[in-house]
Length: 466
Image (cartoon, rainbow, N blue to C red):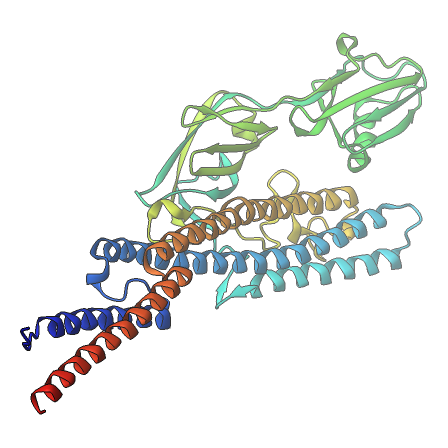
């Protein structure tokens, strides 16, 4: 029988125990930190992928913050615009109330005071609505233009444009003129008593004339009620022309003779106007009378043709959008710039060139209640309300379809990226707990083996000592 001291088993057990100890320490670290990859050596390829995920997540977080701030700006503007709309509704209602025959001079004076106060409140609201010190409604978010021929174009409002690559040039071509609704009478002074009703865009009025009334007298009477009917009367070379106050296919007029002979030229007793036909940069634009709306790509503008231009022979003019706009951008990519603008909503700019502007309703203005232009005042307030409603709708569309949609998409993308990163970097607690238990068992087993080897060695030494 041979007895020897062989240390191979001891070293093997020690090496195994050391490996188990290292693995157990790493497992404990993963369970304590929640990270599967705690160093590059754990998963070199995973570290690269995780770094890319971290970059994408940081960009999404920054874009989300930008989007939320832009949304807050729009909320601030929309809140103010809601109040502007309410004030315009008050102004229009007071103008219509003043038109009633039962309204006394004192009541009209009170209505005028309310209109003055409402316009002052509106201008104050426009000039003081800010976000982080930047005004929102006074044109501070509007685009700048150059080269506009004031004899041809008016009320140019740029809704959106991308001027990042330079000025945006627009060539406006009038292809066909806008027309008013028009009928005429050319039979001279009345041969007998005549009664007829005249209907225009604003309403209908009945008129009665005695035999012998001249076309000039008839024109004067019709013009005195022009606000109520929306029909203007002129006499040219003995012919009485009845025309709608404005241009466009939405304008119409008609006459219905209920007594006497009042025969219109050609037997035509009604007519409708026509919209201008306009192209912008070769593309047909939408038109309502003299008002033109053009949208193509990132560019969206609206403007009015001056009467001498829009109701004349085919002609053209050009202007440029040179810059401005709010400068809103969701992230560093220029493609994500929000090219939306908001022109001034001050009372000097609310309304349009055809009907007039809101400021003219103030005391002493051309359309204050003292002028008797009640319907005109109401039409101006209505046109102003239309502009405000359009601007609110545009901002609401940007907020809903661009910002909110982007934020929702970013949230979904972030969830997917976090999940993908987690699958690489985060520990699977169920799996790692099982592994940790196995390593602990191996650790105990290794320690037991070393103890057994130690006992064997002691036994042999005891034999040698006997």
